[in-house]
Amino acid sequence: MKRILLIKLRYIGDVILSTPLLPILRKRFPEASLTFLVNPGTEGVLFGNPHLEEITVLPREGWGNQLKCYRKLRQARFDGVVDLTDGDRSAFLTYWTGAGVRLGFNRENRWRGKFYTQVLPSAYGSMHMVDYHAQALAALGISDPVGKPELYLRPDDQDQGDQVVISLKIGHAPLILLHPLARYVDKAWPLERFAALADWLADQGAVVALIGHQQEVLIGQQIVNLTKSKPRNLMGHTRLLQL
Image (cartoon, rainbow, N blue to C red):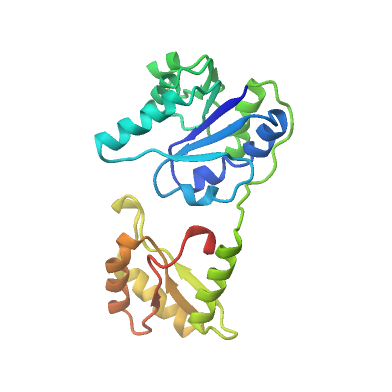
């Protein structure tokens, strides 16, 4: 195979747990072009990965942007697609590429299984997710053991991360970062509890800072306003790999 697409339309941690497949695919297909398709906001953990030629982000909003992405995937003429998502949308995209080899999970035994040339074993929950993803390698005839998830820091990530730490003037105090938000409200702790936690940590001698997306800055400020210790609000000022 000369052009291979991996798909993981989930969250940051899910994408990270997919990275052990990349060096093995590179070793097995040294001349292949590897592309990774992910959700917006998760692509940062793939920046600098030497095994990838391209990172494609699937837009969540705007039919025009989504159709443009669909056309791009179709025109790429992938030989093989490995869908690690286990979802209807990703299954359709796998089929839409027109690739001759289409691998994917279908643990609910839904109709999407028809979009794959081979459905991967559904052992979800019975093994570590790295090993779960690695079942795709076995389907490609690859028996190499998978390693650990990998992140690759670029020089500017290290430098800018160091500058953030310097700006906090932590001295010898421990630095604790709080990320108070979640994609779904029912998964998020109330803001006043994060404020109380920040104050408690400060009382124990820690330097506390809030991290998050640019769109979350105002929520971070609400937490700061609820505290006595006034932690630094770094939301929107750092990238994932700088942390």
